Amino acid sequence: MKKIEVNGITYEVEKDYKNAFDIETVQSKLTEHFCDYDYILGDIAYNKLRLKGFYNTNSSKKEKWNDIAYLEEYIKNYCAYDCAYFLLKKMK
Image 1 (cartoon, rainbow, N blue to C red):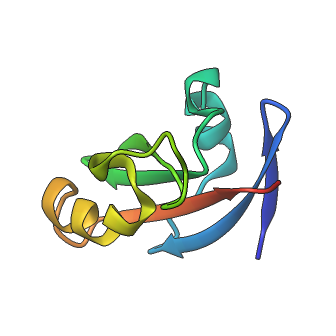
Image 2 (cartoon, rainbow, N blue to C red):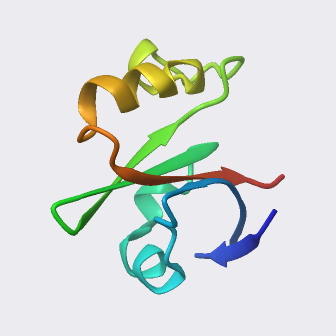
Image 3 (spheres, rainbow, N blue to C red):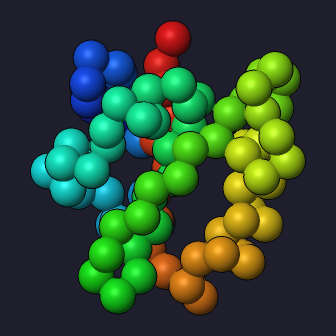
């Protein structure tokens, strides 16, 4: 898997559906707000990148809406149908 570093944090590209991952766009959008999350989902619709953070299921910080176990349901319900997306996992 491909590894990148943004804001001093190393991420692994776990999934890159329809070649959605673009390093320059991610670096410009991935702010310090996302540093706390274990996973970052980036979905593209109407040529715009949206980012959403998720926590590991065993994290004390997770809620239903940001639990990584909810990822597929989130993509199905809140992303454009069959949109391009990628998933980054924070490396420890």
